[in-house]
Length: 250
Figure 1 (cartoon, rainbow, N blue to C red):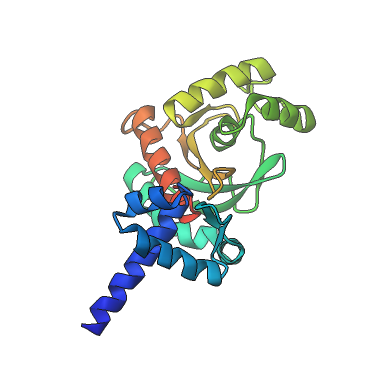
Figure 2: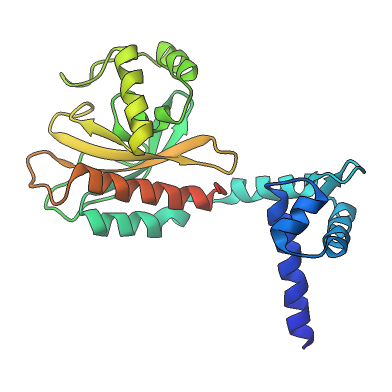
């Protein structure tokens, strides 16, 4: 019985802490958790005493410094390629294409993980390889999560070199494509970064909603396609959302 009571207290505390991420008023937290106001108030006061919660004394509460400190420590210790591997592996098995995990570093991205596809060939990409954002599916997916003014500023700094005859090298044309990427949830690389290679990518975000990377699948264009680009796009977008959840994205 004591064990069950302890679990009940833990569940209530976690419910309050989770509700606090969406609302700040005591009454709203009580409504979201379906707990009595006195119970919610008691839990909040305990967390205030431990610096997990701050209060303005007027019935409003926010996350405290200890929550932020723990979140920061967790993020610094998180080995994303390792934690994302099960998701990447399932994506590789379901699509048969080569899977990449890329991380945003300044005005470019870098491959942090690669799982070879099930087909009898190997792509030239490798872990540690830097890549342009404007010419890759994963890069365009990252750009699509940024406001247009930030995209223009980034492209002005980084440039838009032609990687192949199909590379989009005009800012306005790329921004127009990014609007389509936002609408469908994934980006496509139609031999824009490497002749003979096509790819589909989606962005990864962290607990603040900021884009931090992306995941993609790629294959040679002359290989027979099993399924549509939209099907693969949906698969990649789902994997990106699952990895984003590991980083705290709601």
